[in-house]
Image (tube, rainbow, N blue to C red):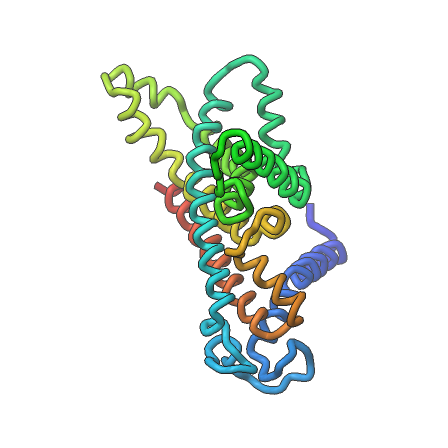
Length: 283
């Protein structure tokens, strides 16, 4: 049946409005990074790259702002560690929940998913209180100084890892459910060891999901604010650094320049993840 013309136009208008709603704020935020003005607001004062490359005030550019660059480095460092740990733990969880049967499996699965529905602030406060209790007990009763349980990068990693593992588990488990177990059984019948089957059959099959899970975990870790704010110490990641700049100085176009870099980087990683999955599916 042919779709009525007026319904087709309504559908096209809806799609157009929807994508404009998504893209317009990003375009507006990015445009002000190139505005030759001290404030990210109209009227347009002219095109400039000072907010990226200027070495002097008052238009100190992103690539010369030591505090923003340090925050960027901290975010990359935290994101890589969290993503790596989450992929390893998520892979183990995926095998456990997909291929194994054990008591209270459904209950444990629900408990694994719970961190995703807990507000980030609550999760961060809970982790901070729990870690502080352990650190205080170890200090007072055992004479141990567990600095990694105090606010700082190690605690941020632990806090993000607590819910990032759920995300990677779901991504990897979704692909593992489509795996034909008979391929592994055939390899075992031909004399292959469990390690060799895992290395040559199972992990190569899971590689697109592993890469996608790593990218997703890295991006979520990089942009996380609520949980991180509760656990951060002196070495703040980029999101907390930008928030602190907004509170103390106010909005400046250099923050728009940071947004442009983050949008380009996130888009590149997302595109790379899609290409890796498509190439693997085609193979």
